[in-house]
Image 1 (cartoon, each protein chain N blue to C red):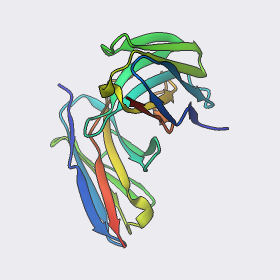
Image 2: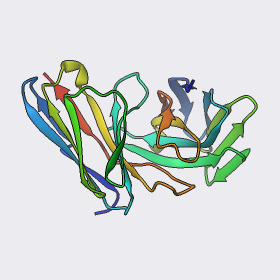
Image 3: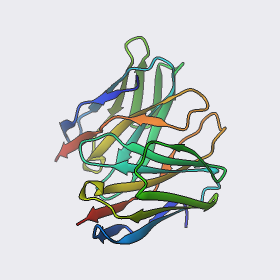
Length: 112
Length: 114
Protein backbone atom coordinates (compact mmCIF):
# COMPACT_ATOMS: atom_id res chain seq x y z
CA UNK A 1 0.00 0.00 0.00
CA UNK A 2 0.93 3.63 -0.22
CA UNK A 3 1.89 5.46 2.94
CA UNK A 4 4.17 8.41 3.57
CA UNK A 5 5.17 9.13 7.15
CA UNK A 6 6.67 12.28 8.63
CA UNK A 7 7.15 13.57 12.14
CA UNK A 8 4.66 16.36 12.84
CA UNK A 9 6.87 18.98 14.47
CA UNK A 10 10.45 20.23 14.42
CA UNK A 11 11.97 23.23 16.21
CA UNK A 12 15.39 24.65 15.42
CA UNK A 13 17.33 27.79 16.28
CA UNK A 14 17.96 30.38 13.62
CA UNK A 15 21.26 29.70 11.88
CA UNK A 16 21.25 25.97 12.67
CA UNK A 17 20.57 23.25 10.13
CA UNK A 18 17.14 21.63 9.95
CA UNK A 19 16.65 18.03 8.91
CA UNK A 20 13.16 16.88 8.04
CA UNK A 21 12.70 13.16 7.57
CA UNK A 22 10.20 11.10 5.61
CA UNK A 23 9.65 7.40 5.07
CA UNK A 24 7.60 5.83 2.33
CA UNK A 25 6.47 2.31 1.65
CA UNK A 26 6.23 1.87 -2.11
CA UNK A 27 9.52 0.79 -3.66
CA UNK A 28 8.27 1.62 -7.16
CA UNK A 29 8.34 5.38 -6.49
CA UNK A 30 9.71 7.28 -9.47
CA UNK A 31 9.97 10.78 -8.05
CA UNK A 32 9.96 12.12 -4.52
CA UNK A 33 9.11 15.70 -3.73
CA UNK A 34 9.33 18.28 -0.99
CA UNK A 35 6.66 20.95 -0.82
CA UNK A 36 6.49 23.95 1.51
CA UNK A 37 3.28 25.51 2.78
CA UNK A 38 3.33 28.87 4.50
CA UNK A 39 0.32 30.02 6.57
CA UNK A 40 -2.66 30.88 4.41
CA UNK A 41 -1.00 29.69 1.23
CA UNK A 42 -1.00 26.70 -1.05
CA UNK A 43 1.83 24.22 -1.47
CA UNK A 44 4.98 25.41 -3.17
CA UNK A 45 7.31 22.91 -4.79
CA UNK A 46 10.72 23.24 -3.15
CA UNK A 47 12.70 20.46 -4.74
CA UNK A 48 12.42 16.90 -6.01
CA UNK A 49 14.63 13.91 -6.62
CA UNK A 50 14.45 11.13 -9.15
CA UNK A 51 14.47 7.70 -7.58
CA UNK A 52 17.76 6.65 -9.15
CA UNK A 53 19.60 9.49 -7.42
CA UNK A 54 21.07 9.50 -3.92
CA UNK A 55 21.46 13.20 -3.37
CA UNK A 56 20.46 16.52 -4.81
CA UNK A 57 21.68 19.91 -3.68
CA UNK A 58 20.04 23.23 -4.47
CA UNK A 59 21.50 26.23 -2.63
CA UNK A 60 20.59 25.79 1.06
CA UNK A 61 18.60 22.63 0.40
CA UNK A 62 20.02 19.12 0.33
CA UNK A 63 17.85 16.11 -0.40
CA UNK A 64 19.10 12.66 0.54
CA UNK A 65 17.43 9.49 -0.65
CA UNK A 66 18.10 6.05 0.81
CA UNK A 67 16.14 3.80 -1.48
CA UNK A 68 17.02 0.65 0.42
CA UNK A 69 15.49 2.01 3.62
CA UNK A 70 12.81 4.03 1.75
CA UNK A 71 13.95 7.13 3.59
CA UNK A 72 14.00 10.68 2.28
CA UNK A 73 15.36 13.71 4.08
CA UNK A 74 15.47 17.45 3.49
CA UNK A 75 18.27 19.42 5.04
CA UNK A 76 17.98 23.20 5.23
CA UNK A 77 21.30 24.88 5.97
CA UNK A 78 21.46 28.15 7.93
CA UNK A 79 17.74 28.02 8.78
CA UNK A 80 16.03 31.40 8.80
CA UNK A 81 12.75 32.57 10.36
CA UNK A 82 11.31 32.71 6.85
CA UNK A 83 11.75 28.96 6.63
CA UNK A 84 9.04 28.47 9.28
CA UNK A 85 6.32 26.54 7.47
CA UNK A 86 4.87 23.08 7.00
CA UNK A 87 6.95 20.79 4.80
CA UNK A 88 5.30 17.95 2.92
CA UNK A 89 7.01 14.92 1.53
CA UNK A 90 5.30 13.27 -1.47
CA UNK A 91 5.97 10.27 -3.64
CA UNK A 92 4.91 9.57 -7.18
CA UNK A 93 4.54 6.02 -8.33
CA UNK A 94 4.96 5.12 -11.97
CA UNK A 95 5.48 7.32 -15.00
CA UNK A 96 1.82 7.72 -15.79
CA UNK A 97 0.43 8.16 -12.33
CA UNK A 98 -1.55 11.33 -11.72
CA UNK A 99 -1.61 10.92 -8.03
CA UNK A 100 1.00 11.94 -5.55
CA UNK A 101 0.82 10.44 -2.07
CA UNK A 102 1.52 13.10 0.52
CA UNK A 103 2.63 12.85 4.10
CA UNK A 104 0.80 14.80 6.80
CA UNK A 105 3.48 17.44 6.87
CA UNK A 106 6.17 18.53 9.33
CA UNK A 107 5.70 21.91 10.96
CA UNK A 108 9.07 23.62 11.21
CA UNK A 109 9.37 26.35 13.82
CA UNK A 110 12.48 28.52 13.73
CA UNK A 111 13.40 30.15 17.03
CA UNK A 112 15.14 33.53 16.68
CA UNK B 1 -1.21 36.94 -13.66
CA UNK B 2 0.92 33.84 -13.40
CA UNK B 3 0.59 30.44 -11.75
CA UNK B 4 -2.61 29.01 -10.34
CA UNK B 5 -5.28 31.37 -9.05
CA UNK B 6 -8.18 30.36 -6.82
CA UNK B 7 -11.25 32.34 -5.83
CA UNK B 8 -12.66 33.04 -3.36
CA UNK B 9 -9.90 32.83 -0.74
CA UNK B 10 -12.44 32.33 2.04
CA UNK B 11 -16.02 31.05 1.94
CA UNK B 12 -18.57 30.56 4.68
CA UNK B 13 -21.74 28.75 3.75
CA UNK B 14 -24.72 27.12 5.35
CA UNK B 15 -25.59 23.51 4.76
CA UNK B 16 -28.40 24.40 2.36
CA UNK B 17 -26.43 26.83 0.23
CA UNK B 18 -25.03 26.28 -3.26
CA UNK B 19 -21.67 27.82 -4.07
CA UNK B 20 -18.81 27.31 -6.50
CA UNK B 21 -15.05 27.44 -6.18
CA UNK B 22 -13.06 28.65 -9.15
CA UNK B 23 -9.55 27.86 -10.29
CA UNK B 24 -7.60 29.24 -13.22
CA UNK B 25 -4.12 28.24 -14.34
CA UNK B 26 -1.85 30.39 -16.49
CA UNK B 27 0.90 27.82 -16.99
CA UNK B 28 -0.30 26.19 -20.19
CA UNK B 29 -0.80 22.88 -18.40
CA UNK B 30 -3.15 20.15 -19.59
CA UNK B 31 -4.23 18.60 -16.28
CA UNK B 32 -5.99 20.11 -13.29
CA UNK B 33 -6.76 18.75 -9.83
CA UNK B 34 -8.86 19.37 -6.74
CA UNK B 35 -7.37 18.43 -3.38
CA UNK B 36 -8.89 18.65 0.09
CA UNK B 37 -6.65 19.58 3.01
CA UNK B 38 -8.04 18.88 6.48
CA UNK B 39 -6.22 19.34 9.76
CA UNK B 40 -4.02 16.41 10.78
CA UNK B 41 -4.77 14.43 7.60
CA UNK B 42 -2.75 13.96 4.44
CA UNK B 43 -3.84 15.81 1.35
CA UNK B 44 -6.74 14.00 -0.29
CA UNK B 45 -7.03 13.95 -4.05
CA UNK B 46 -10.66 14.56 -5.04
CA UNK B 47 -10.74 14.95 -8.82
CA UNK B 48 -8.37 14.92 -11.76
CA UNK B 49 -9.03 16.32 -15.21
CA UNK B 50 -6.66 15.51 -18.01
CA UNK B 51 -7.19 17.20 -21.38
CA UNK B 52 -10.56 18.36 -20.01
CA UNK B 53 -11.75 14.79 -19.34
CA UNK B 54 -12.28 13.55 -15.82
CA UNK B 55 -9.86 10.68 -15.25
CA UNK B 56 -10.07 10.08 -11.55
CA UNK B 57 -12.71 10.51 -8.90
CA UNK B 58 -11.67 9.22 -5.54
CA UNK B 59 -15.06 8.26 -4.15
CA UNK B 60 -16.01 11.83 -3.45
CA UNK B 61 -19.61 12.44 -2.26
CA UNK B 62 -21.97 13.72 -4.93
CA UNK B 63 -22.47 16.98 -3.04
CA UNK B 64 -19.15 17.95 -4.69
CA UNK B 65 -19.45 18.36 -8.44
CA UNK B 66 -16.44 19.36 -10.60
CA UNK B 67 -16.54 21.09 -13.94
CA UNK B 68 -13.69 21.68 -16.38
CA UNK B 69 -14.88 23.78 -19.34
CA UNK B 70 -11.37 24.13 -20.80
CA UNK B 71 -7.79 23.32 -19.92
CA UNK B 72 -7.30 26.59 -18.03
CA UNK B 73 -10.38 26.61 -15.82
CA UNK B 74 -11.71 24.29 -13.15
CA UNK B 75 -14.72 24.65 -10.89
CA UNK B 76 -15.96 22.81 -7.85
CA UNK B 77 -19.69 23.17 -7.33
CA UNK B 78 -20.86 22.68 -3.77
CA UNK B 79 -24.35 21.90 -2.52
CA UNK B 80 -25.86 20.56 0.67
CA UNK B 81 -22.50 20.37 2.39
CA UNK B 82 -21.85 19.04 5.88
CA UNK B 83 -19.78 20.67 8.65
CA UNK B 84 -17.10 17.97 8.18
CA UNK B 85 -16.56 19.34 4.66
CA UNK B 86 -14.95 22.41 6.21
CA UNK B 87 -11.36 22.40 4.95
CA UNK B 88 -8.87 24.08 2.67
CA UNK B 89 -9.60 23.20 -0.95
CA UNK B 90 -6.56 23.35 -3.18
CA UNK B 91 -6.44 23.43 -6.93
CA UNK B 92 -3.35 22.27 -8.79
CA UNK B 93 -2.19 21.85 -12.36
CA UNK B 94 0.49 19.90 -14.16
CA UNK B 95 1.71 18.96 -17.61
CA UNK B 96 0.96 15.29 -18.03
CA UNK B 97 3.23 13.08 -20.13
CA UNK B 98 6.11 15.30 -19.06
CA UNK B 99 8.59 12.83 -17.52
CA UNK B 100 9.46 15.50 -15.02
CA UNK B 101 5.81 16.25 -14.22
CA UNK B 102 5.31 18.51 -11.22
CA UNK B 103 2.22 19.83 -9.49
CA UNK B 104 1.73 23.55 -9.07
CA UNK B 105 -0.79 24.60 -6.44
CA UNK B 106 -3.02 27.60 -5.93
CA UNK B 107 -3.37 29.30 -2.56
CA UNK B 108 -6.60 27.51 -1.79
CA UNK B 109 -10.11 28.36 -0.68
CA UNK B 110 -10.70 28.08 3.07
CA UNK B 111 -14.24 26.74 3.35
CA UNK B 112 -16.32 26.81 6.52
CA UNK B 113 -19.67 25.03 6.57
CA UNK B 114 -22.00 26.11 9.36
